[in-house]
Image (cartoon, rainbow, N blue to C red; front, side, top):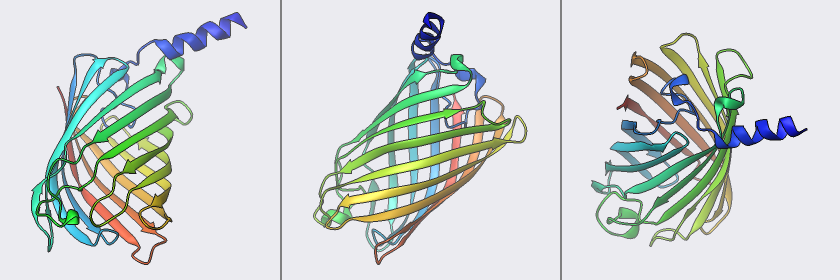
Length: 252
């Protein structure tokens, strides 16, 4: 019994070896001193918010310890029939409780905070920001050893969004299954399937989400391109939102 307690303690304390994972893996984290740059060009058709838009987004994630990552994201978007402008800046972090020292198992906690900073068309102003202050927290558990050539995971958590002139405050709770299949060292397919509950926002409703992406490492363990597509159906009268785009990831 003592032996198992010591093994569990080691799994919770020792840092992850980020180099053992493909840089596009859902559980990849930069090691201490490394930086990930994610640059995305995305297109949105969002009937829920009654907008069509495209945007250019950047995220920079730095490894402060091998099991601690902190990042910053920002962007610019053009919303059809509304306006264009900067997106609100977001600060996020990830702490890894369980690393691959425990036979390919991972347990992460993610936090996200994005204050309202710029004008928003949804607040009756010009600009392309979301017009609210958002806070989110998610836990993700998964493994690279359950199936050959697969990373499997499950994600659960919430996002709280403050009120705007166009919408009351509310929270989004989600449960999502993740899978990534590698058919060689350079190519992989990622899938996600989730259920979301929207509570507040003047009424409660649900969403059913599906996502797919293809990742190609151009320079192994350094640079990768990922085209992606995500779609969500809602139980509201206005039912569909879809996002597609291309992400470029570079590890410094």
